[in-house]
Image (tube, rainbow over all chains, first blue to last red):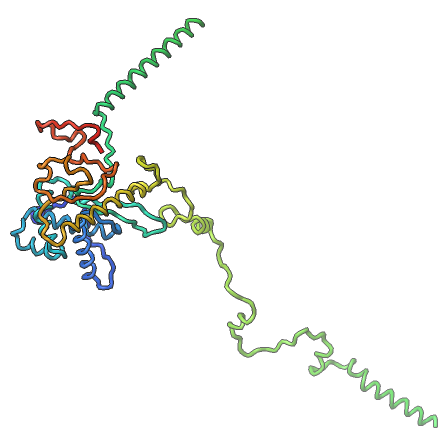
Length: 185
Length: 201
């Protein structure tokens, strides 16, 4: 059977989308799960950085990415996208934020729009631990410091050359001493 | 007189012979075999039916039927690496943070560093939410700390909603977030902005 090419129908998200939804248990069942995830997505768009347990963060990330991606692809005049934004965002001022602030921000992004970082685990604690879900480009201090060390930075280039010089000088000295020893013997 | 005495003795002898001697001499009758033969300690009666469950009336309980193999013993005691490992192994996934020196699990944030970031972030978020309220949000946020208003030019605030924070900027939160550092900087950009060391946070 030939499978139809669905890649153009659904926006290709820049995150690992799981095939099955995670069944977050709650007394209200699947409806309660969606209610919880709606609250999470609303909070993410409102506060731009939230700390919560890893399983729900992972689920909410997928829904948030899809919402933003659809908003970018279709814009605010698309009926279905507006209905989705209305459903997922409980506070209606955030619908404005999605189309007016987040869409221009992520227009030319080649990466994902959200970042999911594993937070510190307190012993004994919950087995999956906390996670911090944030929208990229937020005005807050960075969670992980940028610790890049490229070899073509000037100070690294100079250090490499200095190392080479030192090693060659040491080899010359060692060769000199061994030659003198052999000459003596 | 002598005749009577003699008769008395002969009668007694006959009696004696009849009571005591003749039983010993004549063949034994079934009635008195047990008295002659040495009887057993317990008189075993021949039971008509035998109940197997009567064996438990004593102390016959469950006992092992097979010897436990060495493999089973080892599995129970130490577990298996891919199953349930019962050995206490050292934690090799704890590293020291390069920035502050506290310990944290590999792949997770340092709790000391994150607590500082979290405290600052919550202050900023509170102020942001307070400023924006329930009005439609249509602009990006520009965070300005105490005494920084004049350091930014008007172009920076164009199309942004200013959020003033009534405290000085933390030393570790760099102001220079607009400039990209590193090789991915836009080299085609003709504007060369020089950053003075005191401007770096």
